[in-house]
Image (cartoon, rainbow, N blue to C red):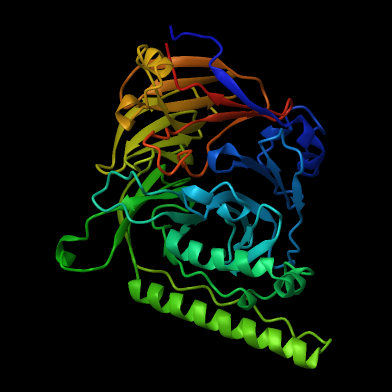
Length: 468
């Protein structure tokens, strides 16, 4: 029997943030965080928490340091054709040296009409762009520093739609959003955007992205780009990049696709987006200053959706009436934990595309990968102030089973259950979107951690790294 005990360390008590979080429904009833329309997301280093309400289309950003005081409430001015909030994710923009500042991160917000918006910690709108006319089911930012694939590529932000997935390169995000941060500081720019979130997206320009149709086997409920993969045999000399994507859905529990990058569109799009955005912004500003015309120009129609890049189906698993629900990737992208409608959890090797493990009896469960110190001697090393390396940690899977009221930790890939932790109802397990070491010159390794947020008490805790 796995040991039971107190293996959670309190990080913050966000009681002072209750007034801010009330805008998302906090405190109205016990277990408010169980509502699927409530979307919590933990920022890098767990320094801030963003909670959105899809039903109320409101976003609240509260700092974790200091107990959550001084939160910011954002109510996007979205038009009828721009939908309501449906997904939230943190996007780190700065290096490790300045990641603690306001310019180090942005909050990405997706809507159920396919719009993507970025906000600063102060609640300023940084960017707005139409992606695809459908509901954004999920936004996922991934670091590629430790990807086990041959060429891990760059950091990325992916947006998942029913049967469609889009990818933003991290370099493109940083280039445009960092510039916007600087523009927001200026008085002229701030006055210009003070009134509206609903400004035409041409005012901001466009961040180039790739988009693929992944509905060959099933309209996906969740999806992820797991990494780069080799090209087809007949295209070995091609300079194109190819990604592997995993999807889960109703008709196919799990499916795999090869996504081919349309590099020409990406390069041209990057040039046009920067050139057109700068030109339009300059002309617009000068015209307002010179003529100061009061009548606003007629609202432009939504831009035509970008055409899909090439997609090649690889394989799928159909097992009616089982339906895939959620997908979680390991840090390297080589393992995926998939939950389904029958209470099962499938562990998939994303390189070999084979199932390596199956758990049963976990309805409504959610999973996150975590790195733990399983050796008892590590506690002694800690007292001697010896820095840990990646090899000191073991990859595990944390399974939150709300119906059982527990969190279980299992050693990967085929190891035993090493920990069982009781957790209160109305809780969610969360994970920062990015890991950054405390100091850029430090040699210490920043392990993947899992946090538990109790919505009713406001307590944010972290799962202790040491076991035993």
